[in-house]
Amino acid sequence: MARDTIFALSSGRPPAAISVIRVSGPRAHEAGEAIAGDLPEARSAGVRELRRPETDELLDEALVLRFDGPASSTGENIVEFQCHGGRAVVDALITTLEGIDGLRLAQPGEFTRRAFENGRIDLTEAEGLADLIEAETETQRKAALALAEGGLRKQIELWQERVLVLSARAEHAIDYAEESGPDVDPELSRDCGALASELQEWLDRPRVEQLRDGVRVVVAGPPNSGKSSLLNAISGQERAIVTDIPGTTRDHIEVPLSLAGVPVLLTDTAGLRATEDQVEAIGVSRARALVEGADVLLWLGDPADAPPHPRLIKVHSKADVRGAAPAGSAGVSAMTSKGLKLLLEEVGALAKSLLPAEDVVALNRRQARHIGEAAEALSAAASADDFVLVAEELRQARFAFDRLTGRAGVEDVIDALFSRFCLGK
Image (cartoon, rainbow, N blue to C red; front, side):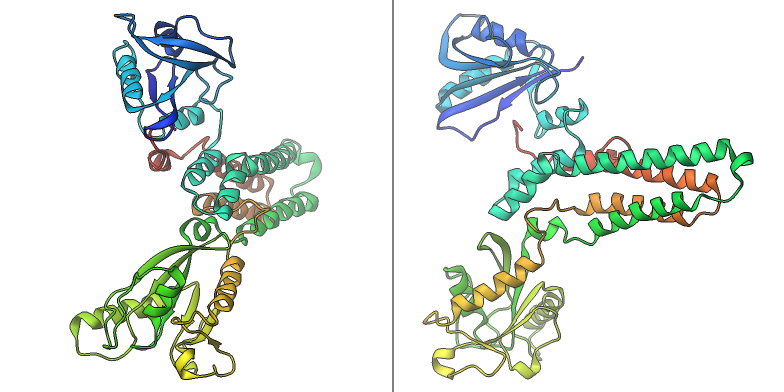
Protein backbone atom coordinates (compact mmCIF):
# COMPACT_ATOMS: atom_id res chain seq x y z
CA MET A 1 0.00 0.00 0.00
CA ALA A 2 3.02 2.30 0.43
CA ARG A 3 3.01 3.57 -3.14
CA ASP A 4 1.91 6.51 -5.24
CA THR A 5 -1.72 7.44 -5.47
CA ILE A 6 -2.77 7.47 -9.12
CA PHE A 7 -5.63 9.10 -11.02
CA ALA A 8 -6.95 9.18 -14.58
CA LEU A 9 -9.98 9.80 -16.74
CA SER A 10 -11.56 6.33 -16.94
CA SER A 11 -14.41 7.12 -19.34
CA GLY A 12 -14.29 8.15 -22.98
CA ARG A 13 -12.67 11.32 -24.22
CA PRO A 14 -14.78 14.46 -23.67
CA PRO A 15 -17.11 16.00 -24.57
CA ALA A 16 -19.64 13.58 -23.09
CA ALA A 17 -22.68 13.68 -20.86
CA ILE A 18 -20.75 12.21 -17.92
CA SER A 19 -17.04 11.67 -17.32
CA VAL A 20 -15.58 9.36 -14.68
CA ILE A 21 -12.28 10.19 -13.00
CA ARG A 22 -10.79 7.54 -10.72
CA VAL A 23 -8.28 7.98 -7.90
CA SER A 24 -6.64 4.92 -6.33
CA GLY A 25 -4.00 4.57 -3.64
CA PRO A 26 -3.19 5.38 -0.02
CA ARG A 27 -4.04 9.09 -0.40
CA ALA A 28 -7.19 8.64 -2.48
CA HIS A 29 -9.61 9.44 0.34
CA GLU A 30 -7.50 12.37 1.47
CA ALA A 31 -7.51 13.79 -2.05
CA GLY A 32 -11.25 13.21 -2.35
CA GLU A 33 -11.92 15.08 0.88
CA ALA A 34 -9.69 17.96 -0.23
CA ILE A 35 -11.82 18.41 -3.36
CA ALA A 36 -15.30 17.23 -2.32
CA GLY A 37 -15.34 17.72 1.44
CA ASP A 38 -16.75 14.83 3.45
CA LEU A 39 -17.00 11.62 1.44
CA PRO A 40 -20.00 9.30 1.35
CA GLU A 41 -19.99 6.00 3.23
CA ALA A 42 -17.99 3.21 1.62
CA ARG A 43 -19.61 1.74 -1.50
CA SER A 44 -22.12 4.58 -1.54
CA ALA A 45 -22.60 7.61 -3.78
CA GLY A 46 -23.30 11.21 -2.85
CA VAL A 47 -23.67 14.52 -4.69
CA ARG A 48 -20.88 16.92 -3.76
CA GLU A 49 -19.52 20.30 -4.85
CA LEU A 50 -16.02 19.88 -6.24
CA ARG A 51 -13.73 22.76 -5.32
CA ARG A 52 -10.10 23.68 -5.90
CA PRO A 53 -8.46 23.22 -2.46
CA GLU A 54 -6.15 26.25 -2.57
CA THR A 55 -8.79 28.78 -3.71
CA ASP A 56 -12.14 27.14 -2.87
CA GLU A 57 -13.16 27.81 -6.49
CA LEU A 58 -16.17 25.75 -7.56
CA LEU A 59 -15.22 23.31 -10.31
CA ASP A 60 -18.42 21.28 -10.72
CA GLU A 61 -21.21 19.52 -8.89
CA ALA A 62 -20.73 15.79 -9.24
CA LEU A 63 -21.58 12.34 -7.98
CA VAL A 64 -18.80 11.04 -5.71
CA LEU A 65 -18.25 7.37 -4.81
CA ARG A 66 -15.94 5.94 -2.17
CA PHE A 67 -14.47 2.45 -1.93
CA ASP A 68 -12.26 1.15 0.87
CA GLY A 69 -9.39 -1.23 0.24
CA PRO A 70 -8.91 -4.11 0.11
CA ALA A 71 -12.59 -4.52 -0.88
CA SER A 72 -12.24 -2.45 -4.05
CA SER A 73 -11.47 -3.14 -7.69
CA THR A 74 -7.75 -2.36 -7.20
CA GLY A 75 -7.47 -3.57 -3.62
CA GLU A 76 -6.72 0.02 -2.54
CA ASN A 77 -8.74 2.99 -1.37
CA ILE A 78 -10.60 4.50 -4.33
CA VAL A 79 -12.57 7.67 -5.00
CA GLU A 80 -14.54 8.18 -8.22
CA PHE A 81 -15.80 11.52 -9.46
CA GLN A 82 -18.68 11.28 -11.94
CA CYS A 83 -18.69 14.84 -13.23
CA HIS A 84 -20.11 16.65 -16.24
CA GLY A 85 -18.26 15.56 -19.36
CA GLY A 86 -17.19 18.88 -20.86
CA ARG A 87 -13.51 19.28 -21.70
CA ALA A 88 -13.10 22.30 -19.43
CA VAL A 89 -14.64 20.50 -16.43
CA VAL A 90 -12.49 17.38 -16.94
CA ASP A 91 -9.31 19.42 -17.49
CA ALA A 92 -9.98 21.51 -14.36
CA LEU A 93 -10.44 18.42 -12.18
CA ILE A 94 -7.39 16.67 -13.65
CA THR A 95 -5.29 19.81 -13.09
CA THR A 96 -6.52 20.04 -9.50
CA LEU A 97 -5.56 16.42 -8.82
CA GLU A 98 -2.12 17.02 -10.34
CA GLY A 99 -1.58 19.80 -7.81
CA ILE A 100 -2.10 17.53 -4.76
CA ASP A 101 1.08 16.12 -3.22
CA GLY A 102 1.55 12.38 -3.63
CA LEU A 103 -0.74 12.06 -6.64
CA ARG A 104 0.29 11.37 -10.22
CA LEU A 105 -1.35 10.50 -13.52
CA ALA A 106 -1.77 6.74 -13.97
CA GLN A 107 0.06 4.81 -16.65
CA PRO A 108 -1.94 2.73 -19.17
CA GLY A 109 -3.38 -0.32 -17.45
CA GLU A 110 -2.09 0.67 -14.02
CA PHE A 111 -5.43 0.35 -12.23
CA THR A 112 -5.84 -3.23 -13.51
CA ARG A 113 -2.19 -4.00 -12.80
CA ARG A 114 -2.71 -2.98 -9.17
CA ALA A 115 -5.77 -5.21 -9.01
CA PHE A 116 -3.56 -8.08 -10.19
CA GLU A 117 -0.68 -7.25 -7.83
CA ASN A 118 -3.06 -6.94 -4.88
CA GLY A 119 -4.69 -10.29 -5.59
CA ARG A 120 -8.08 -8.99 -6.71
CA ILE A 121 -7.75 -10.77 -10.06
CA ASP A 122 -5.32 -13.29 -11.49
CA LEU A 123 -3.44 -13.08 -14.78
CA THR A 124 -6.07 -14.97 -16.76
CA GLU A 125 -8.78 -12.51 -15.65
CA ALA A 126 -6.52 -9.57 -16.58
CA GLU A 127 -6.07 -11.10 -20.04
CA GLY A 128 -9.84 -11.42 -20.31
CA LEU A 129 -10.28 -7.74 -19.45
CA ALA A 130 -7.77 -6.77 -22.12
CA ASP A 131 -9.65 -8.84 -24.69
CA LEU A 132 -12.98 -7.38 -23.52
CA ILE A 133 -11.76 -3.83 -24.09
CA GLU A 134 -10.65 -4.75 -27.63
CA ALA A 135 -13.74 -6.86 -28.48
CA GLU A 136 -15.49 -5.76 -31.68
CA THR A 137 -17.94 -8.62 -32.26
CA GLU A 138 -20.53 -10.33 -30.08
CA THR A 139 -18.58 -13.59 -30.14
CA GLN A 140 -15.41 -11.82 -29.01
CA ARG A 141 -17.32 -10.08 -26.21
CA LYS A 142 -18.77 -13.31 -24.85
CA ALA A 143 -15.43 -15.14 -24.90
CA ALA A 144 -13.59 -12.25 -23.25
CA LEU A 145 -16.27 -11.83 -20.59
CA ALA A 146 -16.13 -15.52 -19.67
CA LEU A 147 -12.38 -15.17 -19.08
CA ALA A 148 -12.64 -11.82 -17.28
CA GLU A 149 -15.28 -13.17 -14.91
CA GLY A 150 -12.96 -15.95 -13.76
CA GLY A 151 -14.09 -18.86 -15.92
CA LEU A 152 -10.54 -20.18 -16.38
CA ARG A 153 -9.40 -19.18 -12.87
CA LYS A 154 -12.12 -21.31 -11.27
CA GLN A 155 -11.16 -24.29 -13.41
CA ILE A 156 -7.47 -23.84 -12.55
CA GLU A 157 -8.33 -23.82 -8.86
CA LEU A 158 -10.02 -27.21 -9.26
CA TRP A 159 -6.98 -28.58 -11.10
CA GLN A 160 -4.64 -27.22 -8.45
CA GLU A 161 -6.64 -28.89 -5.68
CA ARG A 162 -6.41 -32.23 -7.47
CA VAL A 163 -2.65 -31.88 -8.02
CA LEU A 164 -2.16 -31.00 -4.35
CA VAL A 165 -4.02 -34.16 -3.33
CA LEU A 166 -1.89 -36.22 -5.74
CA SER A 167 1.27 -34.60 -4.38
CA ALA A 168 0.23 -35.39 -0.80
CA ARG A 169 -0.30 -39.03 -1.77
CA ALA A 170 3.12 -39.20 -3.42
CA GLU A 171 4.88 -37.55 -0.46
CA HIS A 172 3.10 -39.88 1.96
CA ALA A 173 4.30 -42.87 -0.06
CA ILE A 174 7.89 -41.57 0.09
CA ASP A 175 7.69 -41.26 3.88
CA TYR A 176 6.37 -44.81 4.22
CA ALA A 177 8.28 -46.42 1.36
CA GLU A 178 9.71 -49.13 3.60
CA GLU A 179 6.20 -50.25 4.56
CA SER A 180 4.42 -49.83 1.21
CA GLY A 181 7.26 -51.01 -1.01
CA PRO A 182 9.12 -49.29 -3.86
CA ASP A 183 6.47 -49.74 -6.55
CA VAL A 184 4.30 -46.76 -7.44
CA ASP A 185 0.63 -47.19 -6.56
CA PRO A 186 -1.19 -47.97 -9.85
CA GLU A 187 -4.17 -45.91 -8.71
CA LEU A 188 -1.95 -42.84 -8.24
CA SER A 189 -0.56 -43.33 -11.75
CA ARG A 190 -4.07 -43.64 -13.19
CA ASP A 191 -5.21 -40.46 -11.44
CA CYS A 192 -2.21 -38.53 -12.77
CA GLY A 193 -2.92 -39.83 -16.26
CA ALA A 194 -6.62 -38.96 -16.01
CA LEU A 195 -5.85 -35.35 -15.12
CA ALA A 196 -3.29 -35.16 -17.94
CA SER A 197 -5.97 -36.36 -20.37
CA GLU A 198 -8.42 -33.75 -19.10
CA LEU A 199 -5.87 -31.00 -19.66
CA GLN A 200 -5.20 -32.34 -23.16
CA GLU A 201 -8.91 -32.04 -23.96
CA TRP A 202 -8.66 -28.32 -23.16
CA LEU A 203 -5.56 -28.03 -25.34
CA ASP A 204 -7.40 -29.61 -28.28
CA ARG A 205 -10.04 -26.86 -28.30
CA PRO A 206 -9.85 -23.97 -30.81
CA ARG A 207 -7.72 -21.11 -29.49
CA VAL A 208 -8.79 -17.56 -28.81
CA GLU A 209 -6.33 -15.95 -31.26
CA GLN A 210 -8.54 -16.65 -34.28
CA LEU A 211 -11.48 -15.24 -32.37
CA ARG A 212 -9.53 -12.13 -31.42
CA ASP A 213 -7.66 -11.55 -34.70
CA GLY A 214 -10.33 -12.84 -37.06
CA VAL A 215 -10.58 -15.92 -39.29
CA ARG A 216 -8.47 -15.25 -42.39
CA VAL A 217 -10.59 -15.68 -45.51
CA VAL A 218 -8.38 -15.43 -48.59
CA VAL A 219 -9.71 -14.67 -52.08
CA ALA A 220 -7.38 -16.18 -54.68
CA GLY A 221 -7.26 -17.06 -58.35
CA PRO A 222 -5.70 -15.98 -61.66
CA PRO A 223 -5.71 -12.35 -62.86
CA ASN A 224 -9.06 -10.85 -63.94
CA SER A 225 -11.06 -13.62 -62.23
CA GLY A 226 -13.13 -11.11 -60.23
CA LYS A 227 -11.28 -11.29 -56.90
CA SER A 228 -11.23 -7.54 -56.21
CA SER A 229 -14.83 -7.12 -57.35
CA LEU A 230 -15.90 -9.88 -54.97
CA LEU A 231 -14.01 -8.29 -52.07
CA ASN A 232 -15.68 -4.94 -52.76
CA ALA A 233 -19.11 -6.57 -52.97
CA ILE A 234 -18.65 -8.45 -49.68
CA SER A 235 -17.24 -5.46 -47.79
CA GLY A 236 -19.79 -3.05 -49.26
CA GLN A 237 -17.13 -0.49 -50.19
CA GLU A 238 -14.57 0.14 -52.91
CA ARG A 239 -11.50 -1.18 -51.11
CA ALA A 240 -9.76 -2.71 -54.13
CA ILE A 241 -9.07 -1.18 -57.56
CA VAL A 242 -10.97 -2.99 -60.32
CA THR A 243 -9.82 -2.80 -63.98
CA ASP A 244 -9.66 -5.06 -67.02
CA ILE A 245 -5.86 -4.87 -66.95
CA PRO A 246 -4.32 -8.12 -65.65
CA GLY A 247 -2.05 -7.70 -62.63
CA THR A 248 -3.80 -4.61 -61.22
CA THR A 249 -3.58 -5.98 -57.67
CA ARG A 250 0.11 -6.06 -56.77
CA ASP A 251 -0.20 -6.56 -53.00
CA HIS A 252 -2.81 -8.05 -50.71
CA ILE A 253 -5.66 -5.96 -49.27
CA GLU A 254 -7.22 -6.80 -45.89
CA VAL A 255 -10.75 -5.89 -44.78
CA PRO A 256 -11.92 -6.82 -41.25
CA LEU A 257 -15.58 -7.86 -41.21
CA SER A 258 -18.14 -9.43 -38.91
CA LEU A 259 -20.24 -12.19 -40.45
CA ALA A 260 -23.15 -12.97 -38.10
CA GLY A 261 -20.97 -12.02 -35.15
CA VAL A 262 -17.95 -13.99 -36.38
CA PRO A 263 -14.80 -11.88 -36.88
CA VAL A 264 -13.33 -12.34 -40.34
CA LEU A 265 -10.27 -10.86 -42.04
CA LEU A 266 -11.12 -10.87 -45.76
CA THR A 267 -7.97 -10.77 -47.89
CA ASP A 268 -7.69 -9.98 -51.61
CA THR A 269 -4.53 -11.22 -53.33
CA ALA A 270 -2.56 -10.67 -56.49
CA GLY A 271 -3.55 -12.83 -59.47
CA LEU A 272 -1.60 -16.07 -59.57
CA ARG A 273 0.41 -16.36 -62.78
CA ALA A 274 3.97 -16.43 -64.08
CA THR A 275 5.23 -12.88 -64.65
CA GLU A 276 8.43 -11.07 -65.57
CA ASP A 277 7.31 -7.93 -63.74
CA GLN A 278 9.45 -7.75 -60.59
CA VAL A 279 6.84 -5.95 -58.48
CA GLU A 280 4.00 -8.20 -59.58
CA ALA A 281 6.18 -11.26 -58.91
CA ILE A 282 6.56 -10.15 -55.29
CA GLY A 283 2.78 -9.83 -55.03
CA VAL A 284 2.29 -13.30 -56.53
CA SER A 285 4.76 -14.77 -54.04
CA ARG A 286 2.90 -13.15 -51.15
CA ALA A 287 -0.40 -14.40 -52.57
CA ARG A 288 0.85 -17.99 -52.60
CA ALA A 289 1.96 -17.66 -48.97
CA LEU A 290 -1.44 -16.26 -48.01
CA VAL A 291 -3.19 -19.14 -49.78
CA GLU A 292 -1.15 -21.62 -47.76
CA GLY A 293 -1.94 -19.80 -44.50
CA ALA A 294 -5.65 -19.23 -45.20
CA ASP A 295 -8.22 -20.47 -42.73
CA VAL A 296 -10.87 -20.41 -45.48
CA LEU A 297 -9.95 -20.18 -49.17
CA LEU A 298 -12.22 -18.72 -51.86
CA TRP A 299 -10.90 -19.95 -55.23
CA LEU A 300 -12.05 -17.99 -58.28
CA GLY A 301 -10.06 -19.83 -60.92
CA ASP A 302 -10.65 -23.03 -62.87
CA PRO A 303 -12.02 -25.59 -60.36
CA ALA A 304 -9.48 -28.14 -61.61
CA ASP A 305 -6.63 -25.75 -60.69
CA ALA A 306 -7.82 -25.16 -57.12
CA PRO A 307 -5.04 -25.74 -54.58
CA PRO A 308 -5.64 -28.42 -51.94
CA HIS A 309 -7.15 -26.87 -48.81
CA PRO A 310 -9.26 -28.28 -45.96
CA ARG A 311 -11.78 -25.41 -46.15
CA LEU A 312 -11.99 -24.61 -49.85
CA ILE A 313 -14.93 -22.89 -51.53
CA LYS A 314 -14.85 -22.89 -55.32
CA VAL A 315 -16.45 -19.70 -56.62
CA HIS A 316 -17.84 -19.31 -60.13
CA SER A 317 -17.50 -15.53 -60.38
CA LYS A 318 -19.19 -13.20 -62.88
CA ALA A 319 -22.15 -15.55 -62.97
CA ASP A 320 -24.28 -12.83 -64.58
CA VAL A 321 -22.22 -13.07 -67.78
CA ARG A 322 -20.59 -16.52 -67.54
CA GLY A 323 -23.75 -18.50 -66.97
CA ALA A 324 -24.50 -21.29 -64.54
CA ALA A 325 -21.83 -22.52 -62.17
CA PRO A 326 -20.31 -25.97 -62.67
CA ALA A 327 -21.07 -28.67 -60.12
CA GLY A 328 -19.33 -28.08 -56.82
CA SER A 329 -18.89 -24.34 -57.36
CA ALA A 330 -20.85 -21.41 -55.94
CA GLY A 331 -22.18 -19.08 -58.63
CA VAL A 332 -21.74 -15.44 -57.63
CA SER A 333 -22.11 -12.09 -59.35
CA ALA A 334 -20.44 -9.10 -57.74
CA MET A 335 -22.42 -6.81 -60.07
CA THR A 336 -25.92 -8.11 -59.24
CA SER A 337 -25.13 -9.69 -55.82
CA LYS A 338 -26.64 -12.95 -57.09
CA GLY A 339 -25.43 -15.84 -54.93
CA LEU A 340 -23.59 -13.52 -52.55
CA LYS A 341 -25.82 -14.26 -49.55
CA LEU A 342 -25.44 -18.03 -49.94
CA LEU A 343 -21.66 -17.65 -50.31
CA LEU A 344 -21.40 -15.57 -47.14
CA GLU A 345 -23.48 -18.10 -45.23
CA GLU A 346 -21.09 -20.86 -46.30
CA VAL A 347 -18.05 -18.74 -45.39
CA GLY A 348 -19.60 -17.87 -42.03
CA ALA A 349 -20.31 -21.52 -41.23
CA LEU A 350 -16.74 -22.57 -42.02
CA ALA A 351 -15.32 -19.65 -40.06
CA LYS A 352 -17.49 -20.42 -37.05
CA SER A 353 -16.28 -24.04 -37.04
CA LEU A 354 -12.76 -22.75 -36.38
CA LEU A 355 -13.75 -20.69 -33.35
CA PRO A 356 -14.29 -21.75 -29.75
CA ALA A 357 -17.88 -22.53 -28.79
CA GLU A 358 -19.60 -19.65 -27.03
CA ASP A 359 -20.26 -21.70 -23.89
CA VAL A 360 -16.63 -22.72 -23.26
CA VAL A 361 -13.56 -20.81 -22.09
CA ALA A 362 -11.01 -20.41 -24.88
CA LEU A 363 -7.26 -20.46 -24.22
CA ASN A 364 -4.69 -18.10 -25.63
CA ARG A 365 -1.16 -19.21 -26.58
CA ARG A 366 0.37 -18.33 -23.20
CA GLN A 367 -2.34 -20.14 -21.25
CA ALA A 368 -2.14 -23.18 -23.54
CA ARG A 369 1.64 -23.29 -23.15
CA HIS A 370 1.46 -23.53 -19.36
CA ILE A 371 -1.44 -25.99 -19.38
CA GLY A 372 0.63 -28.04 -21.81
CA GLU A 373 3.54 -27.95 -19.36
CA ALA A 374 1.27 -29.19 -16.58
CA ALA A 375 -0.15 -31.93 -18.82
CA GLU A 376 3.35 -33.06 -19.79
CA ALA A 377 4.44 -33.20 -16.14
CA LEU A 378 1.34 -35.18 -15.18
CA SER A 379 1.90 -37.64 -18.03
CA ALA A 380 5.48 -38.11 -16.84
CA ALA A 381 4.21 -38.65 -13.31
CA ALA A 382 1.76 -41.28 -14.57
CA SER A 383 4.57 -43.29 -16.19
CA ALA A 384 7.22 -42.80 -13.50
CA ASP A 385 8.36 -45.89 -11.61
CA ASP A 386 9.61 -44.11 -8.51
CA PHE A 387 7.65 -42.11 -5.93
CA VAL A 388 10.37 -39.45 -5.81
CA LEU A 389 10.06 -38.90 -9.56
CA VAL A 390 6.26 -38.77 -9.28
CA ALA A 391 6.49 -36.11 -6.55
CA GLU A 392 8.93 -34.03 -8.61
CA GLU A 393 6.75 -34.14 -11.73
CA LEU A 394 3.74 -33.11 -9.66
CA ARG A 395 5.75 -30.20 -8.28
CA GLN A 396 6.46 -29.13 -11.88
CA ALA A 397 2.73 -29.31 -12.64
CA ARG A 398 1.96 -27.06 -9.65
CA PHE A 399 4.59 -24.58 -10.81
CA ALA A 400 3.06 -24.55 -14.31
CA PHE A 401 -0.32 -23.64 -12.81
CA ASP A 402 1.34 -20.88 -10.77
CA ARG A 403 2.80 -19.42 -13.98
CA LEU A 404 -0.62 -19.73 -15.60
CA THR A 405 -2.32 -17.63 -12.91
CA GLY A 406 0.59 -15.20 -12.53
CA ARG A 407 1.78 -16.32 -9.11
CA ALA A 408 5.27 -17.11 -10.42
CA GLY A 409 7.54 -16.69 -13.43
CA VAL A 410 5.48 -14.20 -15.46
CA GLU A 411 7.67 -11.10 -15.34
CA ASP A 412 8.27 -11.35 -19.08
CA VAL A 413 4.55 -11.02 -19.92
CA ILE A 414 3.33 -8.52 -17.32
CA ASP A 415 4.50 -5.33 -19.04
CA ALA A 416 3.33 -6.51 -22.46
CA LEU A 417 -0.12 -7.39 -21.14
CA PHE A 418 -0.89 -4.19 -19.24
CA SER A 419 0.45 -1.97 -22.03
CA ARG A 420 -2.60 -3.17 -24.03
CA PHE A 421 -4.92 -1.34 -21.61
CA CYS A 422 -6.05 2.22 -22.11
CA LEU A 423 -5.28 5.03 -19.69
CA GLY A 424 -7.64 4.90 -16.72
CA LYS A 425 -8.28 1.13 -16.85
